[in-house]
Length: 111
Length: 110
Image 1 (cartoon, rainbow over the protein chains, first blue to last red):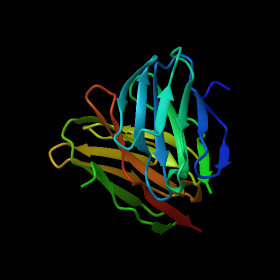
Image 2 (cartoon, rainbow over the protein chains, first blue to last red):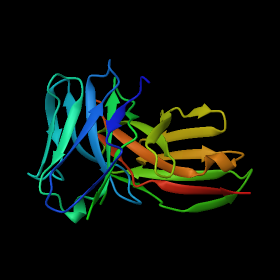
Image 3 (cartoon, each protein chain N blue to C red):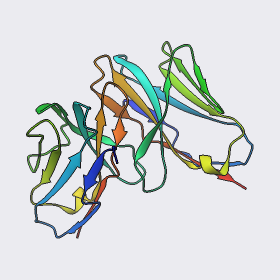
């Protein structure tokens, strides 16, 4: 499979716990994006990387959120001290230029 | 005001109908536009790019009006399989900042 993959696909956690999600982009794509999507809404931009450099972060991304892309390949998104409002689908997308290719997403439920 | 706005729908249409979706954007820096399709509980997938001259792909026609900051998607002879949410996306001149609309839900009924 040469598409974008994300792991895990589902995560249920208790409020206050830390969670980490992984995204493996299409190998030749140097840009990688993270989005959050809640029911009835379009994807909301969180952050993006050009190779290993994190170039932009949304104001939606509080101090509890951090993302890395250490070798310009896969990326991780960590949420510390999760809150119920963090429950959402977290989508990763990679792009060679202007078309985005999305992974299947990680659905987070915070109880 | 959101940067990209869409009529949320739902649009409920019979098979074979023609349906049009509208999208408006407020950021004049947006240079490229796309329509994505998202099935229930799935990831968005690119449907088509949108060009000022208008472009057509089978039953789908997309149009961009920069003066009015308006994008449209027309679906002709709609099929049951067209049922999905259609997302309008604007991208800035550097191809870096992607802004998605909230999506318009379409249900094609038998």
